[in-house]
Image (cartoon, rainbow, N blue to C red; front, side):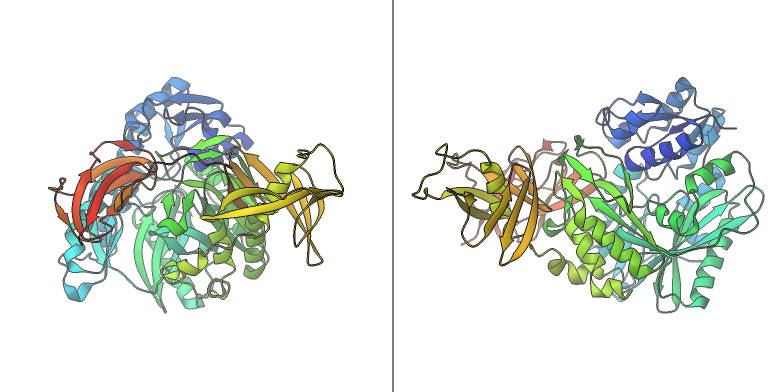
Length: 614
């Protein structure tokens, strides 16, 4: 029997494994980097062991340090979570060689499927060896790992070499393995996968299908189970192929077989030899705890001959600290408040007051809804996200709500190109026009300029706010009946709650303030000073860092004085495990270059200046 588990991961998945272990009476050990010293997963585990450093390559990708931590803490088993070393056969062997139980598939199965090129060969599928114009578009993919890292769509043959180099660099950073390959890119396909669970006694369960078609940068955003709209024959085909793949490598534990579905044809993508981020939708539909089953299988228990029956429908949305309208740029900062209605499941690696840093994936939480039908589950999840309290960095919450309510999604007509087609409309700002007034009234509560009322109305008071990138001015007065504003009737106003009567409709606004940041219901505002200080002026053509990160590369031969063309890549930033390309804003001359490989930069830092050709 397993009595103590070290979770070789961080964030949400580490907290999720700890929760199941605690319910089973199993003690837990967390590992954490310096950046995660105060992270939630390190706080909720029974014991925590530091891994010096902050970069993944120095910490969560150091299998030797993790095994050493497990032995030092007295753990007798290791759960890898997902990402990092979860699909590393060498790490699995090191765990076993140390006398610990590996809560995952055999190293041989990981080796057979961990490389996507070898997995395809095992099933008789050959990757592209030579790419021609006729093959375009193609997809460059990392042979190890997943999660959208090391993936690039190439539509022009001239871009292939650069995208291969970028994918290799990103794969090395994320997985410690720079092998990449090329395969056809299927336009308009759906991403469908099958959850498998196998024991060491020959039983393999296929726990239904999932649809994960809504993706950005090849990373999933919204997932659901079962996959809607599959014919009975196609559903049977993908489940049978998933079982066949698991049996072919003697698989044991939880895994996922992924397909790209176009029409009635399913194209095998890969087998992930680990738990998936989206596993909660399968848990909700089948009424199982997949982490608990992983532990039971690792202890040698046999599965029942048949899997449990499915019931209802489940949908999961990944809440990210990112700006979808700003090229999905990751965001950092203090998460002041996170709360969702109790009707849905919340899996998170953050608590109120935690900081979202630059070193890791920007996912804050997963929100999951389960209901008897797909339409009910979608409605439930959209409403929960719409009402969620999220105070902190910019998130994709509004995008998620609009995506769930989009007619293409509700009718199950989506594919992997959903955001390519609909992103501008889904990210169009739609702030509440009365939010600035509600913020100003809450701020003015109890601060009458005159200490009482007069028969002669006072002069209007004003406050300025930045909302959805635009400046707004709120005007109000301290009148004989309290606070007043033009065009609306102030029913109630205090520091936390404002009620306005707008054209006979009573509207309630909950107000919270954290420094200059003000949150009015779901609208975020920034309070602007009455007399703004002079700000630093940047020359036209200045390239500023869009996010905190590390300069990982500067274009070959790029120096001040060099001619550049509009759209030409100049340098690359790495933030939250993704590389972001910084391009020339115009054709002209690079007059200044301040970026140096290895340099840490903050948002707004001046990287370079391009002077446009007259």
